[in-house]
Image 1 (cartoon, rainbow, N blue to C red):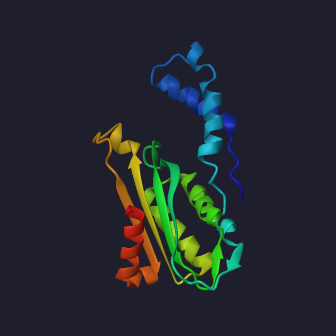
Image 2 (image 1 turned 45 degrees about the horizontal axis):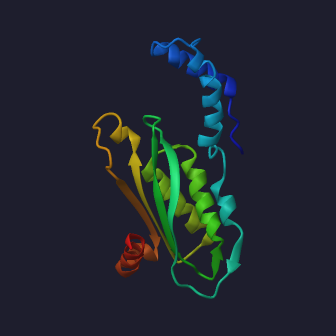
Image 3 (image 1 turned 30 degrees about the horizontal axis):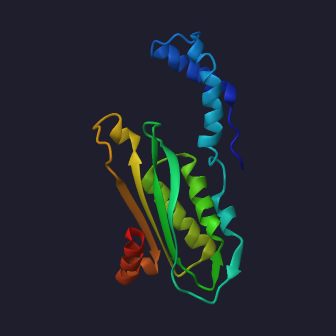
Length: 188
């Protein structure tokens, strides 16, 4: 199921919003703003209705069952509470059990979940759960560090504050050594 953006509704909502904050929607600089925002929404919310697991279905046999790490996957998302951006890096490790996935597929999985109105904690778990379900590795760990504009430009106003979330599944839940190795590698 793919998300179908209703551009007309978005454009009308933007016009109402602009009027609501006291702007003149006929002002030259704002005339095309509703259209620009509806186009932006197609990109920012492209993950709505997408099944992230489609990126994890094509696997390859791998006799090596050592940890695989994809680190520094940049993402941008929108907080579902304030509709302000949050952005940062995702680091993923998994211990294969005979099969691996192409590395770009991990980044594509992140992208599907990031391109939704979302909270970081939920996104972390969704990525870990999809990898566990579809790759069936011996374990997975997802670690996300992000800056949230709802913390930096409004409210408490603490620029530079970073939120860290992680999810562990399988061997990463039971092996402190495995978690420690992963964290040492991503912290470099």
